[in-house]
Image 1 (cartoon, helix red, strand yellow):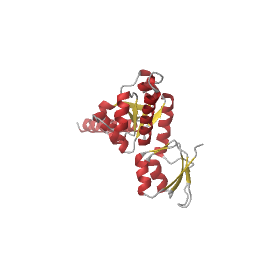
Image 2 (spheres, helix red, strand yellow):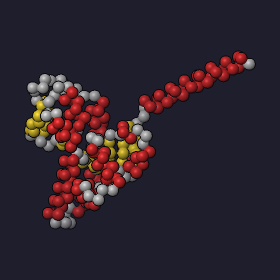
Image 3 (cartoon, rainbow, N blue to C red):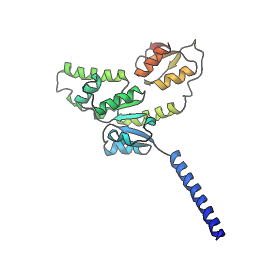
Length: 231
C-alpha cells in the first residue's frame, strides 16, 4: 500500500511539473493583443492574426491584462465618427474609451481604406471636403496615426521593437548636444527613454507627429526641441 501511495505521489508531481512547463510555454509564446474598433474583414484579420491576438473593442472588458494592450486599430471611420472624434462632441462609451486610450500614451491607428467619407471627394464642394481634411489633421495633432493596410503590420513591428529596446542608433550623448530623432511618430515612451539616457535637446522633422503626452513631458522636463525640414 505504501509503495502504491509513493508511486501515486511521484506521478502527481511529474504531472504537475509537466502542466507548469506547459503553462510557462503558453505564456512565453502568447501573442501580443491588439484592439479593433469594429469587426475586421477576413483578409485584414488574417494578415495580423498570425502574430497578434485580435480583440474587438466591445469585448475589452474580457481582456484580463488590458493595461498591457498598447495598440488600438480603428478599421472604419465615417463622417459622423470623424466629426465627433475631432471635436470631442457627443462622447459615447466607445469614443470615451478611445480618448482614454490615447491619454494613456498608447497607439491608435486609423486605417485609410476604412475612411468612408473620402468617397465624397469630387461629389461635394471642395471647401466642404477641405473641412473634412482639416478634421483629419486635428486628429493627427492629437496623436492618431493614419495609414494604409499594407503599412500597418510594418508599423506595429517597429513599435514592438522600440518598446522592447532602444534602437541601435540611439547612442548616449551629453545633455549639451542635440539628438536627431528621425521618426514619423514620436510618443511619450520614446522621449522618456532618450531623456533617461541624458538627451534633453532634440532635432525633430517638421513632418513628424508628436503625441500630446509627449509634448506635455517635453514641456515639464524643459526639453529643447528644434524642428528641421524632413528628409
